[in-house]
Length: 334
Ligand code: CP
Ligand code: NVA
Image 1: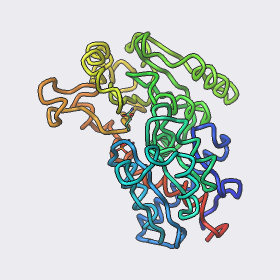
Image 2: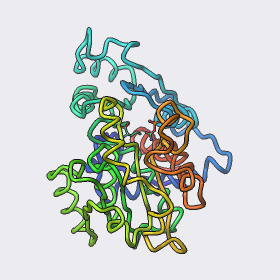
Image 3: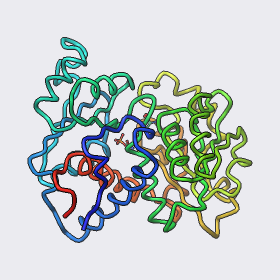
């Protein structure tokens, strides 16, 4: 028996605050149920005849494939549309494209640069729109992160997440709010120039307070990670910022997650895990790291028993499926 909230029917996800705390937690539970169902070999029809447009302005491995397979697993389908494929924002405005695609598809997942584009799609398409990453937010990622923490530790209670690196990027912004909503303590370790934006931080602090936890920001990563149960990092240069590569590598080198930093949590023999949204520069095997070696995380940590990055990555599919099912499925439960 799968249960979801009627209130999620037809809903869009622009950012973590699009759902109430309860709706967010419920969605994570639904994803866990859908995961168990898939692992039991069930390929159902909860999304039968549902058609989803995937508009991608930026590259993706996880979000694209998770969305396509989530839809197909349950009898629906998803069409991958990149900028060169459609007139989007060039020969045709976002508003017109939204109105065209909204009459063809049952939902739209968007990955791109501007948060405003995502919101315009939502405003004009008339169908649910899910934010699959913009420069500002990455909410579908954080649903998977919270599911991974919950299934690894058994609960989201009494957990401290320390995010180390670029503290004001899309993942960091959404993770900070996701933790606040889930009642998870959040610590951001970042250099002064990359600390969270004041308004984004203030909003998360208010939500955290309501849920009995706090949000803290440290410049010194060794100080900041003390007592943390989850060390989380992301790339130092997000998509669209490639011109900043050299300066970021210099600035963020002291923020690399290595075994010394894992030990600095004081939890090396206890409740501790490493998470990364991926892709990660942890070895010499990419174009970027051929010469530099590991950047935001060492191979030792990435390949260690603490690392849950592939559970996290798998959970992208189950959580995206939960979003699609809760918004589009015609049945209240099965
Ligand atoms: N974590 C994540 O969003 O990965 P992709 O860029 O591969 O979709
Ligand atoms: N902050 C990264 C996340 C990638 C999933 C980026 O925007 O490139």
